[in-house]
Image (cartoon, rainbow, N blue to C red; front, side, top):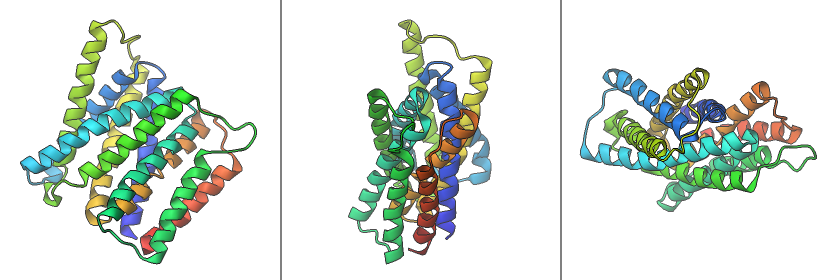
Amino acid sequence: MFVAAIGITAAFIFGCADFLGGLAARRSHVVLVTGVAAVTGLVILLLSWPLTGGALSWEAAAWGAASGFSGALAIALLYACLAVGPMSILSLLTAIISAVVPMTVGLVRGESLQSPGYLGLGLALVAVVLVGFVPERGAVRPSGRGLAMAVGSGAMIGLFLVLIEQAPHDSGMIPLLFNRGVNAVLMLATLVGLRLTGRLGRPLPVGGVRIAMAGGVVDALANAMLLVGVRIGDLAVMGVLTALYPAGTIVLAAGVLKERIAPVQWGGLGIALGATVLLSLG
């Protein structure tokens, strides 16, 4: 039950971070928003390092850095597709893909569940589909460009989960430090390239900077919870639980942006809650 609580809480926090990142990306270039969020997250993790500790090793650094490459691409694509919108649909599509990747890897390498756990996995995926693909008239529809970016983002999020889970369990938050470090360097290098070629576009306004920084703080917290979850639980379970992150995005998109949430989507969120209970028993 504790692992399930960590997973569902991390998922909601991830959803909040994604909403903030997508909102900021509507005000400026997605790479600039991603860079601000990455640097902010790195600062937060560095400040928390004395409290979290962890054994520094080449293995921890390598897995953290590798996850940083996939994470950078995942977040850039995610913020870009959320900026295109609709947030409530595209965030769920990324969730489907991000759940399948670690779940498949975990089960292939021998992780097993009890019957309630397998039922919970199935229901969680059903919930993702119900919330994300609404056949009702008047529901918002994504573009082909948005769909392509969402699929790519989901695949990279799933790969991030697989890579970060490989880090030594005694390394504390050190893998996330290297993850955010690589992420920040990649984004800053890309920003320099865009600036030199004149393709950066308008600067991020003060309000956008604050939103991006808030997203970086929230995302760092969610990643810390995810790392704890994959260390004390199964990769397959955490992969599906964290794939419920669009719930946070959907709720905020409905409240702030007034995106319509259809009854079937609310039903999907209810099924997701039931799936969480089953996963905690499996």
